[in-house]
Length: 320
Image (cartoon, rainbow, N blue to C red; front, side, top):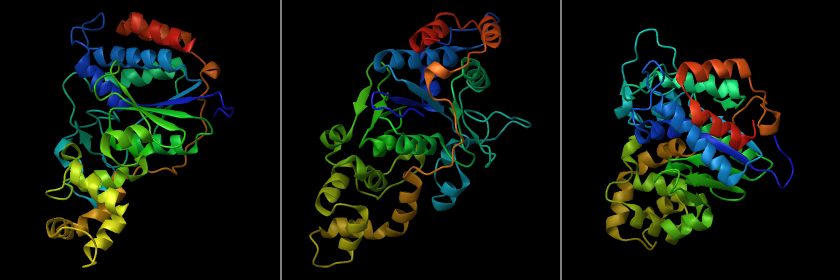
């Protein structure tokens, strides 16, 4: 990893980006044989654009070795339950439409995306881009660990708001929820302006308000505004729960009853939402200038899949 103050690590929430690329790039973008490559080319274009803009010295892609880890499901059974689909017999794809490396559960994915995931991995490997995944953990946990342990400032590229919890200290989140071109550069000041809380409070905030897209119900009747108000008044979820049990604490009867009804959910949900920051990750080559491009493999992939200007732009952006 880089170790001087002028260095900067950019890490990508890869699945978040290739899902968005698949839906954002026309399905008419195909390989010479007509196979879809819109997710592959869209991912390369998005990464290239952000590398051009921020000029990181180091780069890595985080991977979902398990998109729905068993230990998170054990804590909150509804976690991502609505996104499970039957895995195809014999599939070995780990990623969208494929299976979790440990759980063996497949994530629903649109037709045309599953077949592109192995291609993405092949292209990144030929370029020398490190792809980091840890079994029984999501890419979020890899991102959390790399951001927390990086010796240099870090940019976390994602479309997932839960990763706002990392946007403090020397870590900023490049939030592409509105698209790469319209992304937000999120730090603690941005989180405070947007939500009225500090980034370090974001996990508690997310637990209180819930997230239907992840199957997390939150506390019934509490949304962004009331969650922020509670944290502004009490500081943390732990202190909010303590206030519920204290008849002298400043809290309306309505809020008190809502939180009391959900108290058994709050602890497990906190563990689900909080990303892991201490995974054991094998050493890898993050420094872009140290990557070894496999020219023969890359040329074959370019010919087979028609990667064209997308591949060229990424190589140019990284100086490969």
